[in-house]
Image (tube, rainbow, N blue to C red; front, side, top):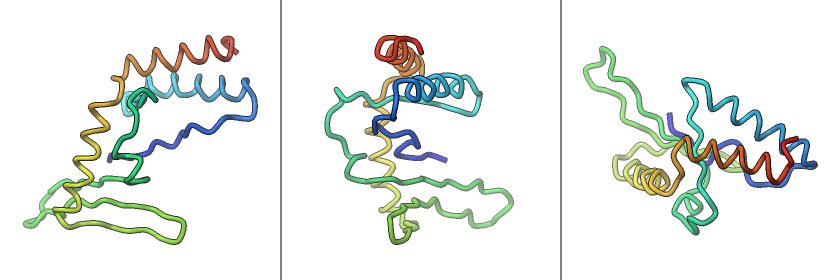
Length: 125
């Protein structure tokens, strides 16, 4: 499953202690084998992900089905949700995800940036 945007967003936490706690939790979560945290730096500028909004790309294993389920893009909004299952719709979101993947820092660079922000901006709190 691929999710954009991540659950953590760039709003400013109430205190530097709260921010430091969130950043610390991110670095601990990144150590889990099933978690990948990648930062899209502000220097990347405008990107298609901002236009797409929040989405989840779902790909289903074929299992024993004669006809596998088609992949689906799930988009949430304030008033409802969309399930996009046409191949051309899915391809648009695959392209958006690919562009984000190219712009984002790798996992180690992201971890180092998170640690740096925690230590420098929040004085290691």
